[in-house]
Length: 204
Image 1 (spheres, one colour):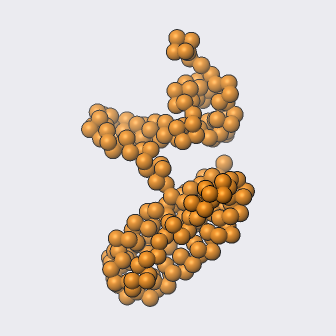
Image 2 (cartoon, one colour):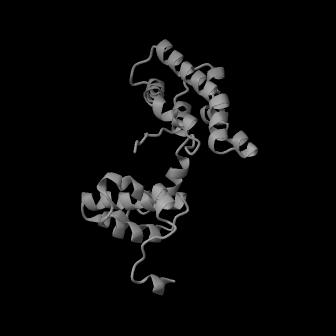
Image 3 (cartoon, helix red, strand yellow):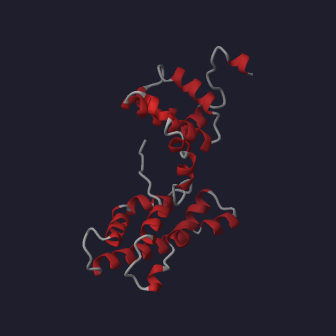
């Protein structure tokens, strides 16, 4: 199972927006997310799957390519120090080009990670609670559990059902196929008949 790291065009847009000083007004108006996404039009046409991918490749990819051509031209033409905010923002975009283009070929991937950041907002909101994780390892496990719970919710999975099943199944599941226990694949393979706990009848 290959895992592709994702980038967020929203993050790139924010970085550039905070470092526009010194650019002509016409260049300052380059709206990264809206121009590269075409998400509103995709929603209007109710596209999904291969049709959504085809639409992105046809309409969004040329804009993304022009955007990175613009980034490269600005980066090579500017004469500022590496510590300049604009230099950093342009370099940040260039270094993450492959991650930022993943959404073009995968219709299930959004152009940004805003929805994930919103879902994980409960973690910083409870920062005082995490003082009682006791150890760095404990805090790391809290992060893993929060990520699993948020991912379950994104795929409309009951986190309780998922965790009860996986905690029982993981000991007998082949290690070479452990990726099948991630929420997305678990939903496809095991959600219809999950393993239950002894208190399931009481919960029902």
